[in-house]
Image (cartoon, rainbow over all chains, first blue to last red; front, side):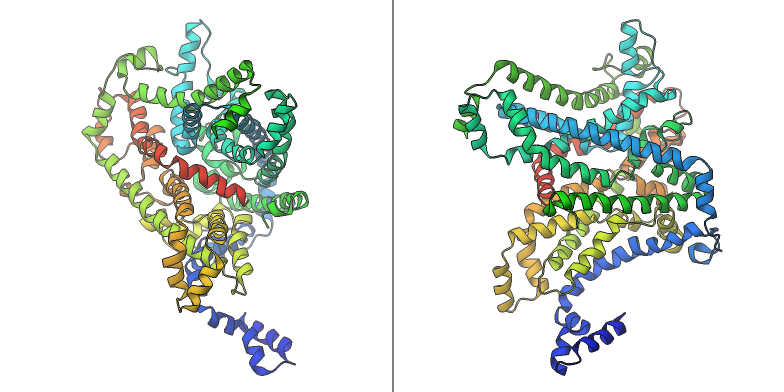
Length: 326
Length: 298
């Protein structure tokens, strides 16, 4: 690496004087700013160990991994792991689930965050605003482990509040843990529940940033508050919304592992409806020690994620250059 | 401020005001209710829960579940200790190194500054997946069952580093750094004595997010530890809720006939979640400013 840089440097700097060429070289740069580069070492070491070396471990997906030989010593087996993954029928299932859930999550999250933000901005009593916002943040602060306790609390077949309330009206209890249809509603609900406080702050910041004079002018023209929202606030939120949605779409192949694992775990009846890429990768690795499957799933997800993020970022860049990630 | 508000009220419609208050109040209430039910359940007597189920308030007040937990507090206290150590040490180290990195990345005299930024950023775009990460950490580095893995695995978030960089660029004037350099201060000293104090507001916000991530992390423990002395609070809670196996001291007594099985789970959840909920109102403003700092710069 350094030899290469030196060599190319020599070529570039050939016509110039020796002293000048030194100044532009890699070594002189490192030497001149040695303290700054030294200050970067801790993070560099960390990311090499915890990100780049595991990244090289991607070759594992093309190997017949065994514990004794390790990632680098195990024999190659080409695309056999991928073949296995795609032929198992799991690939389509988990991809579909991951995308569907994430699209629903993103839609609900955006709608409710904007709704909450718009109505919070309409509230003039400070104490009410403060208390209700505090309450909305609470779910963000707890782990999905705790949320699973809540769900148990409410939906438990024998003792859960929902069934107890239904019993009051003489309605038969719901067996939520063995019926997939409830979860299509429940998971988005919990997702919004946990994130609405966070999302509303994002959109509220955008609303606060809107020039007050626009509203004042509208007031003079006799606009009602409802008109001000539909004609001023919402159109002016559109840029923020588009950026946040595009960035959200970039993460569409990354499932909410914490959520799905804590709420559903290894529940066999719900598996087909709620298995996402992340839970499949986890189960193959930890549950069944199926290294071929686990690594193939991981690579599949990483590659798709990379492509989608690049696309999303390209779209963001086209829409508003300053908001692009890179 | 007041006059602007009044101005806004000039053509206020009472119907619309009512809708706003009702809707916001309703969302807030839905966010809060599960916490109330949880606390109510944990203070209920086991018999009333078995008979009538959970409710919004305790139908029969009882401290049995808590007494049961604190009769053999070994596991819980140990888990508290582990969680506290991980959170405090992890957050401190993470904040220091993140802000140091952020300072480096905004020094314009650094020729490879963009390259270094990309070196960090690329890790958010692409990864080798779970399997190689797991095998590398546990088989090659032999880091399983150490405090080290619990602290290191969730340590950095590239987005936080980039937010800190944007903050330093915006709040530490370049001439200030230049003049300090002319006066002979080195980069390390400038960072420690000038940049770090000026970055306090951002550090507080990022610190809240980092600490929260450590406190709520159960995944690292599940993946990389099997020793009971290294179980953090959230993982202990997970294990107890899924009731696969109760650990240590409690396991020997849980078979007792008088064990409050249902309310026990809830009391355990209250104990594990309590600190976060209690601390949260005090750090809320850092949390809010953290979201908005991040929003300003993608």
